Structure formats: C-alpha cells, structure tokens
Image 1 (cartoon, rainbow, N blue to C red):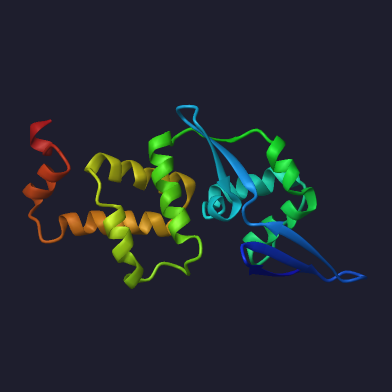
Image 2 (cartoon, rainbow, N blue to C red):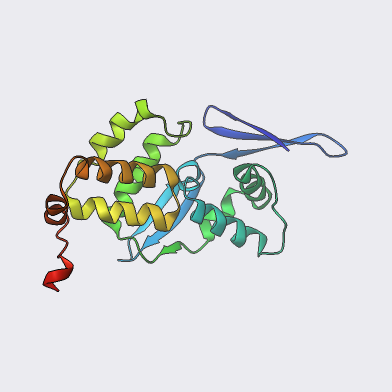
Length: 187
C-alpha cells in the first residue's frame, strides 16, 4: 500500500492482482463529544494527530479483528477507512472524550489544525506554540492533561517546555508560589 497527499486528498495505491487506487478525503469528518456533551465534527487529518483517536478509529473499523501492524499506522488507518468509505463516518456515534471539555478541546483542535502539515516539532516552530500557550495557568494545565489523555506528543512537549520556562531560574519557594504548592511542613 502506497499513499500520497495531493491537494488535501489522500490517494492510496494498492498492489493487488490488478492495480487500483482509492481516494479518501483528508476532510472526512470524525465526530467527537466532550465531557460537557458538545459534539465536534473534526477533519480526519486533524483528528488522527491524537494517537488515542487514531487507535479508537482503527478498533471501530476493524471490530478489533483485523491485524494492522503496518509500519505507518496512519496509512493503515486510512486504508481501513477507505474500505468502509466516508459515508460510514457520517452515521457513526461520536467518539466520547470523557476527560476533555469543549473549551479545552477547541484549543487542542486549534493547535492540531495549525500543526497538521508540520513535520515533528522543531525548536523554530516553538515560537507559535509559545504564543498559543500564553494562557492562564489553569488552562495550560488542562491543555497539558488533554494532550496527555489524547496522546498528542508534540502538544504535550510544547506544554512541558512552557511550564519548564515558567520555573527556569526560580527558587523552590517561588515555584511553590507560582503553582500554589503547599510545603510539606504546612500540611
């Protein structure tokens, strides 16, 4: 199975008795529902940045019966989606995200949309992330927890870098104050 992304369309070439190809739109919708019951229709190319969502889609499509040990899991997932067709996604129940609320998912999806065409995170790309993550401390922690839950490694790394920069050069007392951490002596 070979594939390429051409003008927002995934084109798959399968090597079978007679060569054939399947076209699957990168804009194929994936439905997600947050902990506060807000439903999001997300483009496939954005949604599969989450390893958790990618794994759920593979399990839903294969019913856990088809072996998908392809060296490129995205290719494997997309080939499975090509088998069932984009109309199947429209009828599916949304994927529940029980630990992510709508406001935080909106931020995570904004990050994923910005990074959908990017290669793995490089330091020069961190400038956009740094500005994006310039939010209040509570929101930053919620984004970090959502990135961990959804298994979006580059977003998790960006959050960790931001937190590391917040504590760089500070004394323990200042770090405790920044994150409202009580000393063990005062418990």
